[in-house]
Every structure is written in structure tokens, then in C-alpha cells.
Image 1: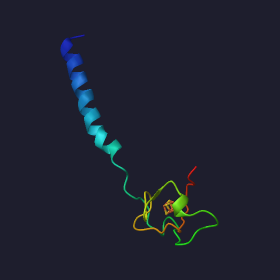
Image 2: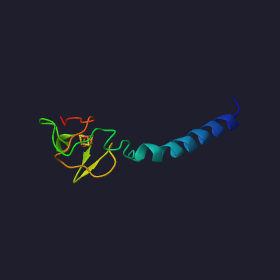
Image 3: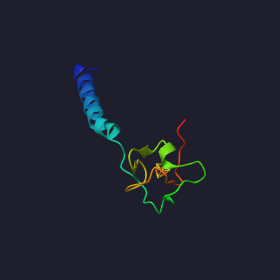
Image 4: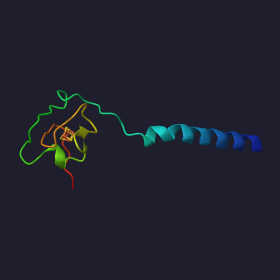
Length: 81
Ligand code: SF4
């Protein structure tokens, strides 16, 4: 195999790796509206935003747009271990 091919592959692989990095490093923006997530500003049993893996203190969510209450709940709830 010509040395130029290996060089071009290495260069292309490096360029793609650099191009892909920001997409992996950036957190995804919230995806759903409160209505789509069936958000409510009160707990559902013992389940609430404050004990959800998607909660971002003090009042944001990784999946639901806008502010949420630590006492709120939605159908995406994911209990912290
Ligand atoms: S229960 Fe979890 S996913 Fe749903 S709004 Fe609260 S923090 Fe976000």
C-alpha cells in the first residue's frame, strides 16, 4: 500500500475524530415540553424531580424544557440509585 494512502486515512480519521468531539462533549438540550412529558409541579408518590437522575439543581431538567420544581414529577422520571 502506498504511504500516501495511510497518511490520508490517518488525516481523515483525525479530522473526523476532532469533528465528532464537540457533539459528544456537549450535553443534549432539553427535548420535551412540560405538557409532552406530562410534568406536574407535585410529586407522584415518592417520585419527584429532586430524586431523578435528570434533575439539575436548583430547578432544571436535562429532558424537559424550562424550569421544574424539585417537588415536581413527569413520565420520564428516573430514580437515582
Ligand atoms: S421527573 Fe426527572 S425527567 Fe421529569 S421533569 Fe423531573 S427531573 Fe425532569
